[in-house]
Length: 155
Image (cartoon, rainbow, N blue to C red; front, side, top):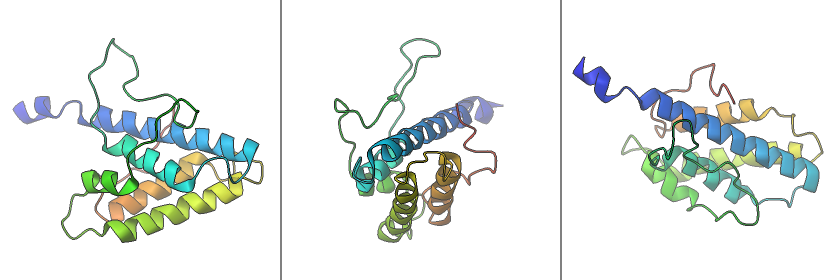
């Protein structure tokens, strides 16, 4: 019972991160669809997405209040640390290759952004892009647990 109590919020914290990461991808999709391919640098999208998963969650100011930003790409939003730093924070195996994982992650974001830039932020669906990104993280031992088929559930 002691172990369960110690890790009681692990899944809810991870779920919160996944939901925020999905929101981030939806924001990026909307910007690409409305402003075109140059709306946001692909590196910034990936760095922000990885930062959401890697950054320690602060304590809640009030019950139900958000612990991570609600927007990531507006002018007043500070850029997040480089994707490499977040990958290092997420690494669970010493043999995991940051460069190889980042290459695959970048390709997924690049492909999705090119399609979103054609004007439809729903194609590809941000949820499927997020699932593909999580799959790469887990394959390369950067995820904290394998992504479930139901994640991200979205908010």
